Length: 239
Image (cartoon, rainbow, N blue to C red; front, side, top):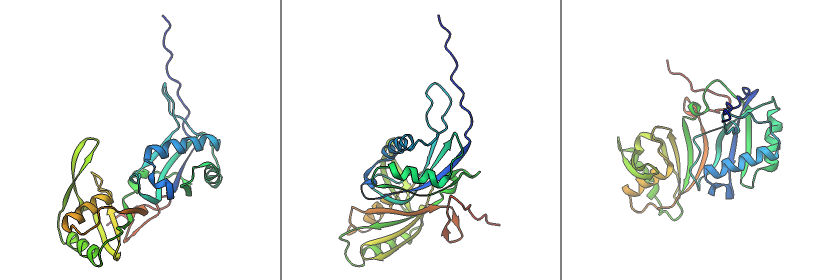
């Protein structure tokens, strides 16, 4: 009987790059898994020299962090690539933009840093558009939520029904106009999503529309009162 050979051990990556990308237009309707497949195809077509994992089924070393939910647009999604060769970051971004499907755009790229990408993505800014809301309703519902010390909602997940404390995740919630809310939320565990906030607002005021068009504007470390650039900034440590 032939002895099974041990798996091939891959060399460590020569370079790590972190990319910020946008989901726009039709891209907002793709799932995180759909984007992953599209990115792997783009990496092959662009001939980016990817580093691979060791084992019997090597795969390109790609790390994702805190992806936006399906149907949400975003200007601030992040992914880390491990490369087998050192490449010019801007050339990698340009090559990927030439072959990525319509709706996905690489916006920025930088060398990897010691901090985990996931640890740097602490908060997000969202724009939530609720078409058809009556004048004043969104602002009133937001004020009622902010007045609470705690407010829980339930959402069905792949592991069953879970309860989320929406109020604990909300740092900022205000009406921009009669049909638009600005939300800043902290990334806690379990993760509270913008649609959980909409659920809470509807429970507080049934006049709040059920459907919201969500766009993530930024995510990163909390630096004072602003969201920093996770490709280049770290959270400011409190004394």
